[in-house]
Length: 212
Image (cartoon, rainbow, N blue to C red; front, side, top):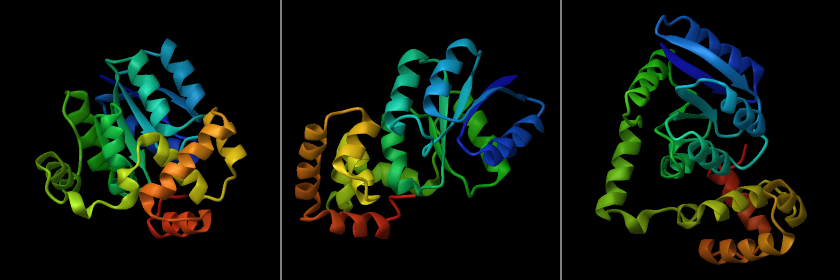
């Protein structure tokens, strides 16, 4: 029996995932959480084999949550679920310790297939993402990478928030870092992405679907 922990801030999504899991005799829902801190607290006292982790869950930056979860519970597998296309989050999620990445437009059967593959110790990625990863490994297509793919994980988190229209102070509060540090990241981001204003970042983020 594979014990599944569902981490998503939308009750309707959690209910749908719960029904999919409950309909399979080889799976059981071990627990649920609606934000990052709730997940990290609950997982300490919940026997879990695999976490279904939403990218956009509140309570802390997604990659920080994933890394904290993997550090505290290295034997627990993580399958990331997201409304964001693979080219935005998948590679970063896999590097941070996830075993798979699945967009929410996939079918229940594909979700169950991903769960089983990840539980057995494998990785689950789509053929498109697998090709993208292969090109990165052999160095092909390096010149074709989008500017946001050149950012560090923290720079990417800051860029998405700047692209959503948040102020430096708001970002500092969300990420629990100083405003001065956020400003430093902003300078690096503008330079790496060859833009000069926040307005340009907003347009870029919207064009590439980097914001909710």
